[in-house]
Image (cartoon, rainbow, N blue to C red; front, top):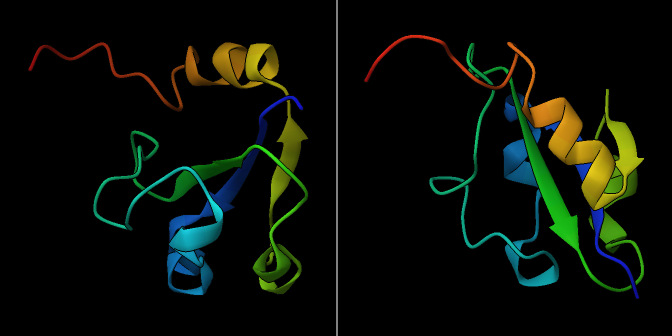
Length: 80
């Protein structure tokens, strides 16, 4: 089964059951440059908690999320 990706507001991270997704915790997720968005991913059926999250974007395939993550919203041009 193909991995599924869903963009969610970082304000909704408290609703994520990390035992149902590939990420390990709210501290380790990748965030958008402005830190208002993040994403979760899973390999099987949609996790039960997803329906409680508002303002989601997706679901996306791996290729679709890679395209999104390459945008200025997710990738900063500033040197670290």
